[in-house]
Length: 433
Ligand code: ZN
Image (cartoon, rainbow, N blue to C red):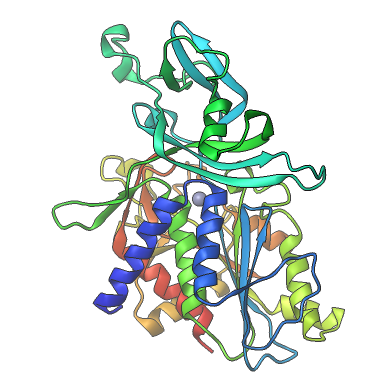
């Protein structure tokens, strides 16, 4: 990549990391980029008239997004090149009836979403991000507002070392009682609850707020770190690095034939369930709808889907220098060594040798750096949406992603050069004949 392109790509990632404070805000930023690049918004419940050479996107319940481009020379046999990533991340979610008064403090009742490293959420200024449902006068169509309070409103203070001398031997935090953030001191008056505060922020009346999906979010800005400035330290690298690589790849890579498509799913961190998760059949319905717009029969649609390919893009475990024993003895991906191809014989990562070979050949053709990742045989590791999606849409699927340290910490660490490699790869995937 030229120096100019490198700077643009890193700026885009910085902007996504700062904007994507919750799944809904990530979708909003993705839609902004797509609209700016001339993509046209569609709604699934409408009839569509798609054009060859057209560029489209579709939001799904605010937190999931699909975008696709149609080749100018689309023919009846052409299939899809697809890439999927997730918009959610492990965090703390604010519960209904959120106010807790305790010994002269106002606190929030929260629950854990996904699998964060809990103690990394302590002692940080925390913001609030997500969406709020408001009364509208039309029962079936409430108003929905996105919320991103850019100022810190909460903090979960640690217990002082003097009050727990064993703290450095490790602390198991109780999820109900020891993660409650403080939002003010003093007694809470009648109209000074969290929802009163939220109503003021939204310029609505307290009683207009019917429900919400709001999370606490870490407000730390992304920063380049190290004597060579090669490390990128930021909240939400899992999985906004992938989200941005997919957006840049789709907008930057065009093919004459076929359809390029990206899917940004919510709910990956809680098992990809529900209508916004990769376990939903919506993507399959979307593929059918796209090809039917071009007059394909049901049988031709099935043939085209069978001939398609999917990248499942999510972060990988980088080798931690302090914990070499946690890694496989022969495959040890390092930061800034290229993106990872993830393999697991258990199919926890969707893969087969033929599709891995496709990835490797594309990398060789374009001089893109990659590494292979496998779990240690005695470590279970994580799963991805790739294996779930490839069960619903039986296409060749491969799991790839940038290597990361401190995955699921409130603040994670990666090598920024890997972002360029994965972006170049996704672009080549969407571009090469
Ligand atoms: Zn992830």
